[in-house]
Length: 280
Figure 1 (cartoon, rainbow, N blue to C red):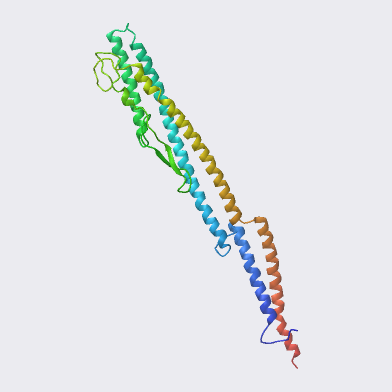
Figure 2 (cartoon, helix red, strand yellow):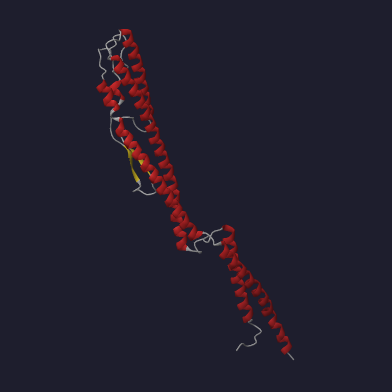
């Protein structure tokens, strides 16, 4: 049974506390609605904040890995284009060689054919040089290209590597002209033959297969990373984002409690006044 006290207004203290709690809860709801985040500080959910930090770290790393994969794919596409151009040029050299081996050619005709061969070899050499930096030579790669395709140490590997026949085998290719030297200045007799061209030309299918396989692998990795990003974004949203409908409902409830507590507090504060009526 409550007693009537002049020095201590217990009802006022209780209602004051209720008003304070309702005001704080209302303020928290407003903050969550304003920021759109369920977790705005460690005190809201320490474990959830830790999950959020890890998810953000993984998402950022995966997005950079996506850029790495895209850059690697562009590189392979670039090298594949160079290889196809090299194949076309080599085929032209082979056709000129077939033409040169016909005995009806005069020295002038052989000189003209050799001039064309030299130009094609020059184009091959220029293509190889364009692929040598900053990656490696084509079609004679001697070192692999390391790609970081994921967010972790284990997500790293050689995307290309191997060896093949380089353009150097054609630098002294001569179809028999005595007046026009080969591309490297060699003037000794007929050094060019179909076997030499075929050795260069038949080495390229292996590179075609390699590039095709690498492009497929990089595309698969890109899609996989994308799915991981979507999954992590969903996890982060589930842990940290505000449920706007739920929080709006909670805010309305807390505001009602806040107004009710303020009204009751006013009444509790005025209760001490009736003590004067008890005095004689």
